[in-house]
Image: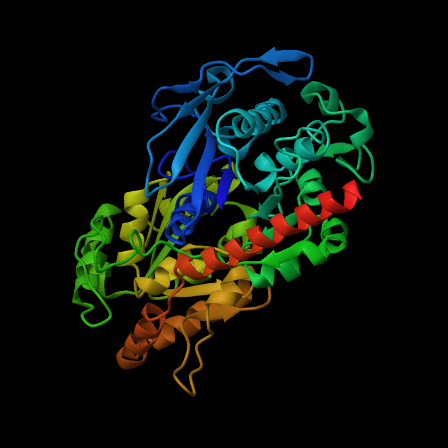
Length: 488
């Protein structure tokens, strides 16, 4: 089967979050399962590409005709890569906007991207299934079922839309409809209208053939008012077309036994290298070597409300009274960056921070930390807690979404479990979970059992690729039945 992935970011070319990891790993796993896969991405600044496949497309964006090119990138792990090349839209300092904000023309940028992706499928690489991702790709099924509804090449091609994070909708003013060239008839309750604004994600939820999200728990959560972000009714109306498929991880990249980015390799059979990685991590963050015997807590995250940084800030002073050290890597909302900088300034020997996206340092944190903290308000899947399991770095997480699906809470009576979880979204609950983890860390045999239990878990992409393959097949058969029914 030929599958065309349509996404706004993907490794090894571009990344701001976990979506990029998925767009690298899932296509590779699908190729290994026997499918033919291509990925189309925007060509951002410094993205390498080869010769043009289509030197000029004519793409209407509202009243304007734009002329992006389609370039081909390197074939990686059997996956073909295409890029929509429009320097005015995509050759910028940031993918979506500076400091967590949006560029004011993001609607036009990703409308063009969706239209160019459709034209790529018409002119260059016709798929059996489109697989779109998040609000930036959600306009494609809208286009396909409206402006391209009578196109004989594509009208029977199904679309699967994956929601990686329900909190990001692609919300724009009402006049956006004319700015991106969508018919005004789509601006209503059964279309893209959302409290007087245009909602790209809502359009995708309504017009895609099938919906997926990235864990079983999150598929349930987004149908509730607490986690649906105002779209829970739309998701409930498509519940028969929604499934949760847990993200995997790529163990050829994330495995301490073979990781070339860390100070020393190690395995469940021989954990001695982890101590060297901890020493190296302290040096990377310029923390005193005297911290080597203290529990080291790692954080790799976007600094956003969703990720629970308000809880961390709430208990910061109490937390720093504990016998621990914290290193944090990431970037995000200015308020959280400022508060974390202040915390590092006040506790320079016990707290260190780097504001950046740094893949090498992320690997070093996974390898060198004793604990990994993810106190998320909500977490569709999460990848770092899965990486942490493999690296013998014990996760402390809130029991939501994929965090709940992947982490088994430690039971002091049986010694079973892979990490520590808390339910209530409060600083007190987070502090209690951390204190439980610190207490178990004092019991070296119990801690080693906990590490080894986590390292034995297998969340590779193979199982997810099989599930997606079945869903693609179902989507194709459903679309064929619809076409047959329409012709009778």
